[in-house]
Structures are given as structure tokens and as C-alpha cells.
Length: 52
Length: 462
Image 1 (cartoon, rainbow over the protein chains, first blue to last red):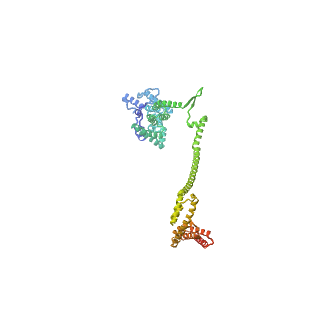
Image 2 (cartoon, helix red, strand yellow):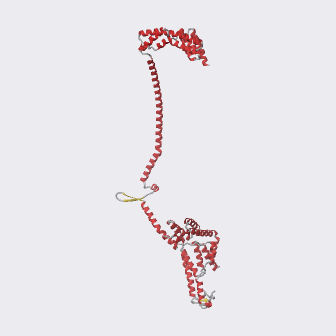
Image 3 (spheres, chains in turn green, yellow):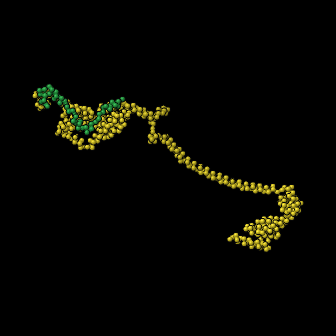
């Protein structure tokens, strides 16, 4: 038997239009390539700013 | 030739590291390939309407490579289909930002911005969904259900709304309705884990219901043994029985029932009316008979009264002994010249009971008494007439006429008629004048009486 209250936790409020701007601005756009660049820069501190 | 992702120096495809900066080109290529693979996977899932898993794949694709515009555009499209317009917008705007010349994201954004009504409706649905979710969290499931139904009306493809509706129905133990909602959600996103879990839960409850219905259906058959075999026939409803041409017996019984009802409601009232009419007629006849019986009884009673009066008169007369006693008394009083008393006693004598001598004596006494009474009453009558006492005159002359209507050559009769005339009693006056005319037509009294009759009759006519 499902626990209604527990199941409710699966549902999150949907984003409304007025929140779209904030949603776009707050989106974390860091991808794996950014991370790879960061890692590469960390490995080569003397050339760390080459790719930036 | 490729460029190094870190220093942008040219790097050949065979080189695993950038000759200039030493950055791992192999890792970069693996990331790019993973992103493409995730995109392909997402595309495949999106084509199969496996939206939630397509979102997973496409999100992974852009997580590997945020500049994977194809994946981002497709992710926006899938979000839109999934009922999440804001997330769709987000993806398209980011795609447009990374690739300003990208036509696809441009087209998507334009289509959304141009169809304002659609976007407003979807946005309203989103806000209502959030309200419904708040209602659920506060325990107002009825209000939540009302609100969520509106959401589905405005945005039928919103999977979350379908799922929440199903959860509300499950909570209310309306498993069939929940199942319907989940099937609708499945049409949009057929492999959604939450939907699948809910369907599994609902089916647990639906199966017993189905079995229960089957049992009911099984009970709706009638079994009977015709001596050789057990025959099962479906139990029919009334309407089905009417429609079924095979149920002839039922139709016959129904016809009989309708006939009986017709007899009760149509024929019986008519019979009752006729019976009432007969009873009314019989009552009237009985009343008439009773009335005639009453009149007969009245006639008989009258006859009895007459006979009684006759009997009384007869009984009032003296018997033999009394008649002789009255005769002797009358004789004695006549000798004493008390003629009034003698006349009274004489009236009590029954002549039929007297013997011959008695009758002779009766005649002698009565002649004497009558003569004397007539003389006296005639004198009294004339005196009364002289003093205009007509009533006394009528009484006196009546007694004279009763004893002897020819007394004084009809003079008593004529004067009686005059007394009646003077007293205003025209009928009796005419009656006695007629008697005078009959007896003494040639005399003065007769002619005078005729004239007076004529005068009285003419005055009556006026």
C-alpha cells in the first residue's frame, strides 16, 4: 500500500513563467569539458591561464 | 584538423595529447563522444515517447557538453511535451545563447512567443498544479482533486498532473479512475518509473475487483436439470427479457398479467357502475313502494277510524233495556211538558230494538215531542230573526227542519235559508232556497226562493 504523504514527496512544484528568468540565470552550466579544462589547468599551473 | 580544447592549438586526430600544452585530447574526445551517445539515446527514447528517460539522456548529454545544441533543443522539446514549459524555455534560451545562429531554437522560441494563448493556458495549468500540490500537502485532497482536474483540462500532457491525480484517487480507493489517469500518463510517457509503480499498485486492487465482478456475472446464470442434462441459461433483466424473442413463455405470462390488470382497472369499474345503478334503481322502487304502502296504510287507518266511530255511535245507543228506559223517561218528561229533555232521551232510543208496542209508543211520544220542540224552536227562530241574531235563528230553524222540513208549509225551511242569507252564508242559503223551490215551486215561497237564488248567484259571479 502506498504511503500518500511519502509519495507526495516525489512531486515538486513546476516552474512558473515568472520564474523563468531566475531559472535561466541560476542554471549551473558547468559541463564535463569545463571540469576537464579545470583539471588540465590544475595539472599545469604554469600554463593554467592558457585556456581561459 | 582539430583544435586543442584548452589552448586551441591544432591537434591531429591520432594525437592523444596536445603537442603545445599537453592537455589530454583523448579525455576530451571521450566526453564529446559520450555527449553524442547520450543525445542519440535521448533521441531514440523521445521517439519512443519514453520522455522521462529521454530527459535523463539529454540532460546527461548537455552535462557532458553544454554546447550540444541538438541535445539542448531536443531536451526543450521533450520538456514541452512533458508539460514543463519553463524548463523547455530555459533550454531553448541557453541554446540560443550558445549558438545565436541556430535556427531550430529560434523557431521553437518564436512558436511559443507567437502562440500567446497556448502559453498562457499552460502557465495557468502550471500555477494550478502548484496550488493542487499545496492542497495535497495540507490534507485538502478534495480541493486538490478539483484543482488538478482543471490542470489536466488545460494541459492534458502534463504527466506530473496525471500522476498526482492518480495518487489522489488511490488514496480515495478509486482504483479504476486512478488506472485511467495512469494510462493517459503512459500515452505521453510510457516508461515513467513512477507511473509504472502506481500502475502496479493499482492493479493489485483492480484484480480482486475484476474477480468479484466475474463472480457476479457467474451468479447471473440460472441452472436447471431437465432430467438428463444440467442446462444453464443467462439470467436476464426485464428489458432483456422483453427483447428476447425466445422468452415466449415469459411474454405469454406478461400478456396474461396485462390482461388481468386491464380487467381490474377497466372492466371492473364498469361492472361496479352498473351494479351501483341497479342498486339505485332498486332503492328508488323500494322507496316508491314504501310510499304507496304508507298511503295504503293511511287509507286503511281511515277506514278503521270510520268503523270505530260507527261502532262508537252504535255503542253510544242504548241497548234494549236502555232504549225502553229512555223511551219511558222521554214519555214521562213529555207528560211534564219538558220537551227538550224528552227529545234528548228520545234520541238515545234505538227503534230497531223495540217491539211493536214500543215502536207505537215511540211514534206517539216522538210526534208529540217533535211537534212541541218544533213549535218552540220555530218561535225561538223567528224571535232571533227579528232581533237580527242570525246564528241563534239558524240553530233554532235547523232543529225544526231536522225534525220536520215541511214544518209550517216549508216556512221553517224558507226562514232557515233567509237566516243563512242574512248571516252572509250564501252557499247554505242557496242550498235551502233550492229545497224550498223543489218542494214549493208553485207557492209564493218557491218563486221568491228562485229569485233570491238568482240574485245570490249573480252577486257571486260579480
